[in-house]
Length: 390
Image (cartoon, rainbow, N blue to C red; front, side, top):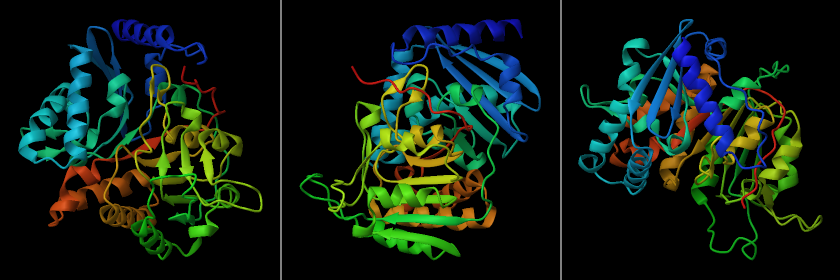
């Protein structure tokens, strides 16, 4: 374990050295015993560190920790990931994207295969460019199966969320759902956006799945209504537009204006941090690119996922890129159906992705749809300071 400890300290030191001054520099090295302690029972925690000259991978499972090293060119990996993402988002044929999918599987997954069980949940802690990778779409060339078919997957955006874990507050175990669909936004504020009829249908279908639910549709879906109702529901589903920003505090959800208060309908990430400790157990951001953002070396991707995790939501589902309206509706209806049955977002996402992969419909079975959706998990804790774009 001595080499594992040395490599972990090097990875943490690199993160601190590269972090902008607006990010707290108190991130402690992730020690081997801390990785093991924070690995949920029955799961494998896979922690990646992309250093200047190598990729180091730690896998923690069944009370033990192993590490692997590969000599790599980080810039080449970043380019491979960017190319794969563009191919998948554009709907390229499998013969075009599979060579990259196979290569990244060999680098990131093959070394740990002998140390995780079949069908074991993998909790992935990416680093740098790996935050932009749709892990679900990596394929084992030996079996012809995608990673999402063989393992339930979840992503933790940074070690900080695990290291600063706090005792969970009591949560409502009932499945009371807040569903927001197609907010009637102000076209003068949000120029170029279109109304999302598919999101409206999606919201209506999901509402029918829950015995107890609140539906905020069209002009009722204001920022104030969303913030008030979120704290009264254990499940939140947002089906609408999202607008990422280079400054992570200015990324926003697009909601309806409220003339009585002068609210324009812009719900910024900075507003979400003011909610405080949220009782919600699951937030689904069924909007474009809610999982993307500038990558901080110490905090991971600074996307719209982060404020929800920071206020204590343990599970957030978000997208890496834009998904077709009709396909999104089918995906998330299947997901909520599975969640109602399992009460487990990891299992629900796994079931949904497998069902889509095996679907007869070419639109649904293509990873452009199901690989864009990732589940992010985090531990409760105090919101951390956010870095601003310079």
